[in-house]
Image 1 (tube, one colour):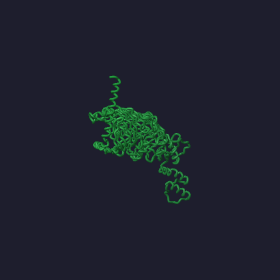
Image 2: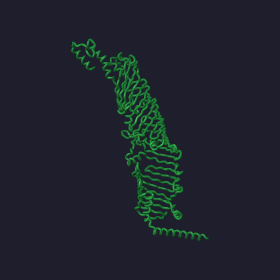
Image 3: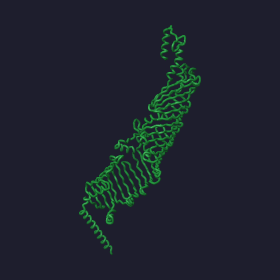
Image 4: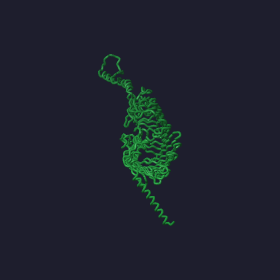
Length: 620
């Protein structure tokens, strides 16, 4: 056979095949009215639990592949899902047409295209989902692990743009998906771009892959969501640039029958935060490990002058406890957490959760030159959470701490504290009102700048008959080690057994701190153990030696709060009656005057009688 004869034979054969196909197409178009099958298609869908209505026309299509196109399709699963499709096109491969001869049930769709669609999903106890402008295209679909392209675009949540472009490989055996993969995956959500790959195998029990995002503004995304869902609040940051630069990288290996690892690296405003999840499926346990070097928390505090509450930023830390129904653990290690006026160093915490009960097994940190340690328990099984807290502070430098946390610089020294507290509530006021418990504290080398205790005592002593001091007093009081016991009840801190000293003055006291009102009241008893308050202090009348002289101090620890300390009024009256009144009476009268004359004889001098009456009236 010559070459010319061979090509002539091939050409003739092709023309014959094309002619036969053309004749078959013409026959199908003329002999088969596909629109007559609308009722059958709707009936088959109903048998599968779907309400299907075809309002448009059905039409054959033959190029590039044979199939049908359907106009105006509406559907519903009679439970939660419903929607419509403007145009649906289904195609099969030419080669697959021959499978009809062998087994019509083996015919599979090789291409799907949706142009314009809408899907609504309203399930009980969940937020409704509405998807609009759905466009989907998948061609050369194979179910034997052969890759085929898929593109999808839609609008969700009131106009948020969503798009997917990937290569899909699916393996189906015995009508069950055995494996699938998404390679060259590109997902777009407004300005967020996600790239990576996902692969599932072993009857979808094992999934592994990686995903990475571009740098995007989280605050901008929250603003978009808040426009649609008013319940979402957008935090107002002290730093306008906070939450504007975020990227996420995730690598995961999830095994439904063994251990799983999900490793995430978050770059938030230039700060690297690693969040690793370990899932023990057989034991139903989730472990979350958070670590970072330096976090500038001051950027995420509420904007100055605003009433914003940015506590929601820490909500992701509660996700493992809220969503995981087994045992959960969150372990956190942060080298440094920076605030405006101080920094927390070497922060470590370990929290365990089970059945809505959280147990803080350890919390340690270096703060204000000292250390903080705590353990506790939080029970959230009822509407009002209940907690227990055991805390310990060691050598906290008050000169650093008070200006930073209370805007107060009156007190300095090294504070150590042991406390055991219990409480309940859903707000800070409720918690403060319900606080109970107690503990003890000590302050090494305390200095109280608001009051000079020795000066206050000497001024009072001069009034009571002591010798006034001409020295210039230094500001504040340098005290010896201060120790005290305290208890809490109904929003009040009761201070008792307070003891300290300065010079020859020993000081003991008791008092009350009202946490909700931010006010305090302290009664301090001073006692002079000697003839002078200190080597360079004032001399003390013998009637004041070795006896308690009470002072009452009250004030507020709010910003610009003031402190007022003065001797007890009843003591002043007692001493004035016993000292100054006697001295004045001796000078005005030839004999000392008492509170009430024992005789009934009229005074000889009217002036003396008048002065005596005035003094008696004032001192009663």
